[in-house]
Image 1 (cartoon, rainbow, N blue to C red):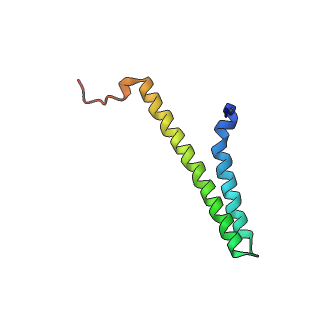
Image 2: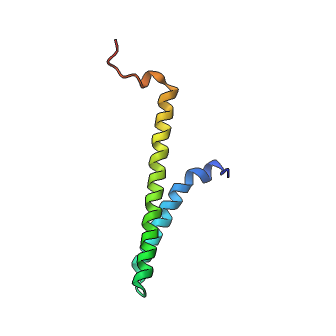
Length: 79
């Protein structure tokens, strides 16, 4: 499946927003403790997924930029 660039870039933020909304919703659910726990765990998982995706993309892009500029990967101890 191919996503457009704006959709691809916004997906982690959507995960984070959905996770925060689910965590807030689990706090407001007072009828069932089991449902509150389930929604809270799903929210936590979505929040962590969004953060992990953001961090992995950042690391991948940094590594890729270093390969594009090989002089940055060799350190400054060579004279």
